[in-house]
Image (tube, rainbow, N blue to C red; front, side, top):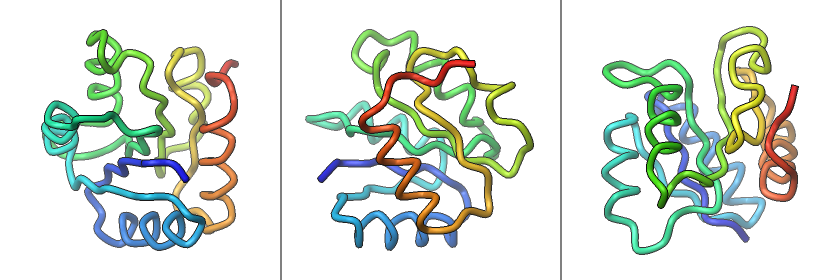
Length: 127
Protein backbone atom coordinates (compact mmCIF):
# COMPACT_ATOMS: atom_id res chain seq x y z
CA UNK A 1 0.00 0.00 0.00
CA UNK A 2 1.35 3.39 -1.02
CA UNK A 3 0.42 6.87 0.15
CA UNK A 4 -0.43 8.94 -2.93
CA UNK A 5 -1.24 12.64 -3.30
CA UNK A 6 -3.44 13.28 -6.35
CA UNK A 7 -3.61 16.85 -7.66
CA UNK A 8 -6.18 17.83 -10.28
CA UNK A 9 -8.59 20.72 -10.67
CA UNK A 10 -11.28 18.36 -12.03
CA UNK A 11 -13.28 16.84 -9.17
CA UNK A 12 -14.44 13.97 -11.39
CA UNK A 13 -10.85 12.98 -12.19
CA UNK A 14 -9.96 13.10 -8.50
CA UNK A 15 -12.97 10.89 -7.72
CA UNK A 16 -11.85 8.31 -10.29
CA UNK A 17 -8.29 8.35 -8.95
CA UNK A 18 -9.48 8.03 -5.34
CA UNK A 19 -11.90 5.18 -6.07
CA UNK A 20 -9.59 3.28 -8.41
CA UNK A 21 -6.46 3.48 -6.30
CA UNK A 22 -8.39 2.99 -3.06
CA UNK A 23 -9.79 -0.26 -4.45
CA UNK A 24 -6.22 -1.26 -5.36
CA UNK A 25 -5.22 -0.82 -1.71
CA UNK A 26 -3.57 2.60 -1.80
CA UNK A 27 -4.24 5.58 0.47
CA UNK A 28 -5.09 8.66 -1.59
CA UNK A 29 -5.03 12.27 -0.41
CA UNK A 30 -6.32 14.96 -2.75
CA UNK A 31 -5.65 18.55 -3.69
CA UNK A 32 -7.69 20.52 -6.22
CA UNK A 33 -4.87 22.91 -7.11
CA UNK A 34 -1.09 23.10 -7.19
CA UNK A 35 -0.97 25.74 -4.42
CA UNK A 36 -3.11 23.49 -2.21
CA UNK A 37 -0.76 20.57 -2.95
CA UNK A 38 2.26 22.71 -2.05
CA UNK A 39 0.62 23.62 1.29
CA UNK A 40 -0.20 19.98 2.01
CA UNK A 41 3.35 18.90 1.21
CA UNK A 42 4.84 21.66 3.37
CA UNK A 43 2.71 20.59 6.34
CA UNK A 44 3.07 16.84 5.86
CA UNK A 45 4.90 14.92 8.58
CA UNK A 46 5.71 12.33 5.88
CA UNK A 47 5.83 12.88 2.15
CA UNK A 48 3.70 10.71 -0.10
CA UNK A 49 5.21 7.78 -1.97
CA UNK A 50 3.92 9.25 -5.25
CA UNK A 51 2.50 12.52 -6.52
CA UNK A 52 -0.08 12.26 -9.31
CA UNK A 53 -0.06 15.70 -10.87
CA UNK A 54 -2.25 17.25 -13.55
CA UNK A 55 -0.36 19.34 -16.06
CA UNK A 56 -2.91 22.08 -16.78
CA UNK A 57 -4.44 23.86 -13.80
CA UNK A 58 -5.31 27.51 -13.14
CA UNK A 59 -2.94 29.82 -11.22
CA UNK A 60 -0.07 27.32 -10.98
CA UNK A 61 0.35 24.45 -13.43
CA UNK A 62 1.71 21.01 -12.65
CA UNK A 63 4.94 21.49 -14.55
CA UNK A 64 5.78 24.61 -12.53
CA UNK A 65 4.97 22.86 -9.25
CA UNK A 66 7.18 19.92 -10.26
CA UNK A 67 10.04 22.31 -11.03
CA UNK A 68 9.64 23.96 -7.62
CA UNK A 69 9.62 20.58 -5.90
CA UNK A 70 12.88 19.66 -7.65
CA UNK A 71 14.53 22.79 -6.19
CA UNK A 72 13.68 21.83 -2.60
CA UNK A 73 16.03 19.20 -1.13
CA UNK A 74 13.15 17.74 0.90
CA UNK A 75 10.97 17.05 -2.16
CA UNK A 76 13.60 16.77 -4.89
CA UNK A 77 13.23 13.00 -5.23
CA UNK A 78 9.44 12.85 -4.78
CA UNK A 79 8.25 10.60 -7.63
CA UNK A 80 5.74 12.22 -9.97
CA UNK A 81 3.23 10.67 -12.36
CA UNK A 82 1.77 13.31 -14.67
CA UNK A 83 -1.77 13.13 -16.00
CA UNK A 84 -2.85 15.35 -18.86
CA UNK A 85 -5.17 15.71 -21.78
CA UNK A 86 -2.20 16.86 -23.84
CA UNK A 87 -0.56 14.80 -26.57
CA UNK A 88 2.90 13.26 -26.28
CA UNK A 89 3.79 13.48 -22.61
CA UNK A 90 7.27 12.05 -23.11
CA UNK A 91 8.22 15.07 -25.24
CA UNK A 92 7.25 17.38 -22.37
CA UNK A 93 8.45 15.46 -19.32
CA UNK A 94 10.97 12.89 -20.47
CA UNK A 95 14.34 13.19 -18.82
CA UNK A 96 13.22 14.87 -15.59
CA UNK A 97 14.71 12.70 -12.90
CA UNK A 98 11.74 12.58 -10.55
CA UNK A 99 9.12 12.01 -13.28
CA UNK A 100 8.08 8.37 -13.32
CA UNK A 101 5.64 8.52 -16.20
CA UNK A 102 2.62 10.13 -17.75
CA UNK A 103 -0.96 9.13 -18.35
CA UNK A 104 -3.16 10.71 -20.97
CA UNK A 105 -6.70 11.68 -19.93
CA UNK A 106 -9.20 10.22 -20.20
CA UNK A 107 -7.74 6.98 -18.88
CA UNK A 108 -9.19 3.64 -17.94
CA UNK A 109 -8.97 2.50 -14.31
CA UNK A 110 -6.63 -0.38 -15.25
CA UNK A 111 -4.31 2.05 -17.05
CA UNK A 112 -4.15 4.16 -13.89
CA UNK A 113 -3.34 1.21 -11.64
CA UNK A 114 -0.67 -0.03 -14.06
CA UNK A 115 0.90 3.44 -14.36
CA UNK A 116 0.95 3.88 -10.58
CA UNK A 117 2.51 0.47 -10.00
CA UNK A 118 5.17 1.20 -12.63
CA UNK A 119 5.83 4.62 -11.10
CA UNK A 120 6.20 3.14 -7.62
CA UNK A 121 8.59 0.40 -8.65
CA UNK A 122 10.40 1.67 -11.69
CA UNK A 123 13.15 4.16 -12.43
CA UNK A 124 12.56 7.72 -13.55
CA UNK A 125 11.14 8.12 -17.02
CA UNK A 126 13.72 8.38 -19.76
CA UNK A 127 13.34 9.20 -23.41
